[in-house]
Image (cartoon, rainbow, N blue to C red; front, side, top):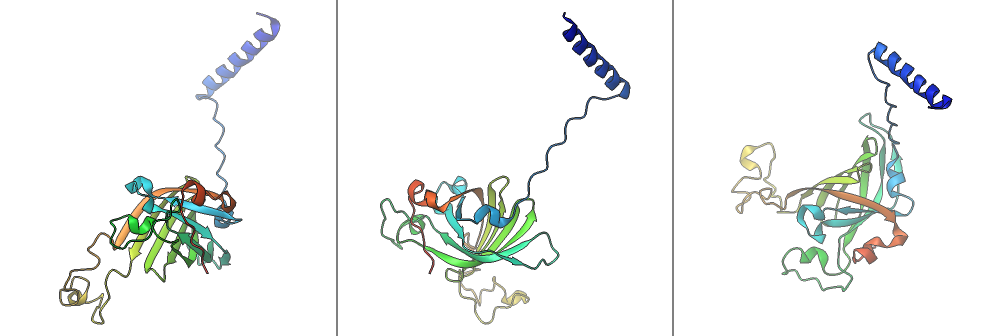
Length: 230
């Protein structure tokens, strides 16, 4: 053993003796705290967000393209974190390779995947609820759905709750605080409660990915038409 090796071994032994005397091992370095970014930093600057629920049902009908067009800061209301609002445009996965005519009588998921480009431009609200986690909500005024996303950009995961508010016309006699006039009223809803069907409320979880719009992932990799909002 040369002199340098002997000195290093002696130093290591001394450190071990000191640690044993103190009753513990050397503390591991603290993990670096995650960097917390804004909603705009993830989906702004010409990027799109592709939300993919295919793992839930194996159908491309459960994949959406979201493009956030604008960002405006909103005064904080004292709950959770920052608020952002603006416009976003969503697109359904209508096939473009080749484009197939829409057929209302075709079984699911043909109505979602075939026909002309389909989507809507809506107003959204994004609320920071954790580090790199945002609750994003909007109402589809043309199609009639309400949507609540919880988007975790750290994990690249998303869960959504979708309520279809147009399952059945709501008669004038409906009263949510009167048990005789609620959705289970046979007189008001002879076909049964519109909320009883599986399509009234949908809960899904999946993954997300962001990419520059110029990469054309939606069009070239997923072979889907882009809805262009007016």
